[in-house]
Length: 301
Image (cartoon, rainbow, N blue to C red):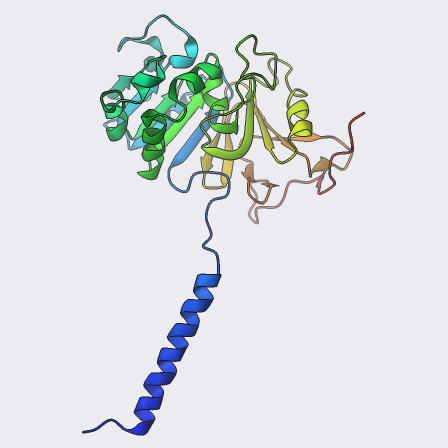
């Protein structure tokens, strides 16, 4: 039976509709993560981390006790590190059974296939503390850096404490080789797992709560995140949740407290959307944090 004229018209209309939809969809940008990684999880800890729950969460996010985990102690500045590195103990106590310690100060070594081989199988990577510029000097823009992104792309977890926290931002806070009291020093580029973010650590314990103001005034496009000791943020996409025993502090040049304060505190359980720059309390309706306004910081001086 031959197709009718009406059938031909119906097929033509459907074809035009499909073509129109294709044009519309092509014009609509695909939503992507603006700040955090598209895949995987980050744990960013403020130093002096002893809370066993955070280490257990890291091991669970990596895939459990049998998951391959890599610990990178380079920030510590030791002459050498071997597989007996003491920093692995807390991960073993959290159940991890397959741990590799990976270290070099030489970026040419870090750019070799042989060095990155453990990272190609890893489901979790942890940076220990020390000075964050050592991590930048050793691994930035090498095959190791690419392999770290690969861990996240596979849905793994990257974590770090103290220097291992700051290195995860795109802007490297306290990156000066002379002293850690210089906020904007001779190293200003981190590994960039959090885009447009500068991270400070040991915040309240070392009375550093005012220090990030200098950075955000100089670079108001950045989001400043300060994390106290024995505290961490767990990042999935553009959102994070505070875990541990103390506070995380937000520095946003376009947000002040109703009292005029330039930063505000998030407690364990609080959540934050880094793209929307909004904080939430863990209530049934995820209510926004009170007293935070959209008023920009006043000019300095």
